[in-house]
Amino acid sequence: MVKKLILSIIAVIMPISLFAQRNSKDIDETYRRSSLYSLLVNHQGRKFYEEINDCFHQIPTPDAYNDHNLSVRAVYTDSKKLKSGKDNEVDDITSFLNRNKIASRLVGKWFDYNPYTGDMDMDIVQQRGLYGATEMQRAKAAISARGSDAVLADAGEDLIGNTFVLVNDISYIDKSKGSAVLGALIQVAGAAAAASTGNSAWNKIGKDYGDIVASFKGFKVRIRTYLYQLVWDEEAQANVYNLAWNNREAFEGMRDKFKLKYIGYQESSGSTTSFLGIREDQPELMVRKACQRALDENIANLQKNFPVFQVKSPLDVETMEAKVGMKEGINEKSLFEVLERVKTSEGKIAYKKVGEVKPVKNLIWDNRYMAEEEMAQGSTLGCTTFKKVSGSDFTPGCLIRQIK
Image 1: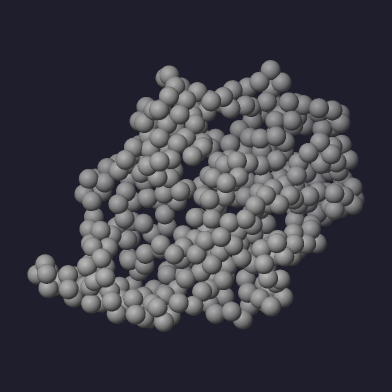
Image 2: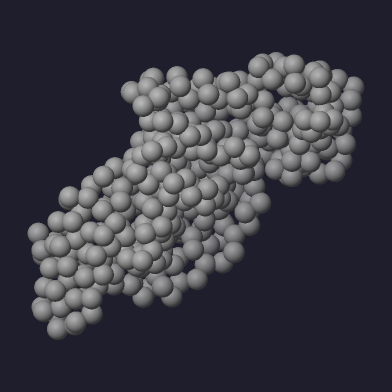
């Protein structure tokens, strides 16, 4: 056991100079993203519920998504009031989302809806859809005439319809007894490493890391993440463009007509999270790291399990680099399709598959939270390098999407 602990500490702490020296070029990240609203279910009265709440509000929206957060980011509940079992919890969460008209609030945010005057605009749609001024003028004219337009159809299919809600039920798991034992073992491992190598630094490393693990009682969380998608069908579009545009009374009267659909569920405890790089007097970082690592793991698994939630990332076709990494669940066995952005005869944006790529071994970016502080291999890369599996020459502007 001690030997394994020593090897684990050495493997994590020793920097790999090859990766530390590597610099990546800037990659153009101008592309269409899905939009995300992330909500916390926090259990008042449970241990560390205040710390969990604070750290959740510090976690930024993932780079692959547009920030579509509403003013309400947390729901507080007595854990006894939330029904046990995944299916029951889904029912409770769905009921909460419906009661609070969350779908209509998401729609309102897309059009910068003013609840006092009813005024709406297309500024966010233009910004996120990368539309030109002429295209937007035609779209606005179509709304005024209650007609159809390619931009409105395209925005509905590729933008507004890709609005998602993540409801994160985060609970602390008490592992204090086991962590005290582990903390002592790590201190012993550090002393053994110092004795065997003649380097007293290992003694201090083992003591510091052991103190952290034991003093903060092995902080660990369980995060259940529930995924919902905004329903933006023809009826919803007609309600906004034909009836409620700049009409406060009409929009307020149809809030119940906007819906969210439940997509799926993922659970993680972030059990493999290392707390190296965190001092004993920084327990708030331990909470943040445990929560963010587990939440990132859930998002990555939801992307793999539900195609509708998958994201696209720009590929630099010259260097074959992309700003994705281990946070997105990438490993040596991952496989990506390469997509070319094209415009259809109807004026909509479509994505044509032109090949496949896979990550290069030892060139996978570890972009997980605080990976650099724990000196993880690949944490300084800044991007992941890919190699072609199939396809001819890729043109600038291509995107990649994980398929395996």
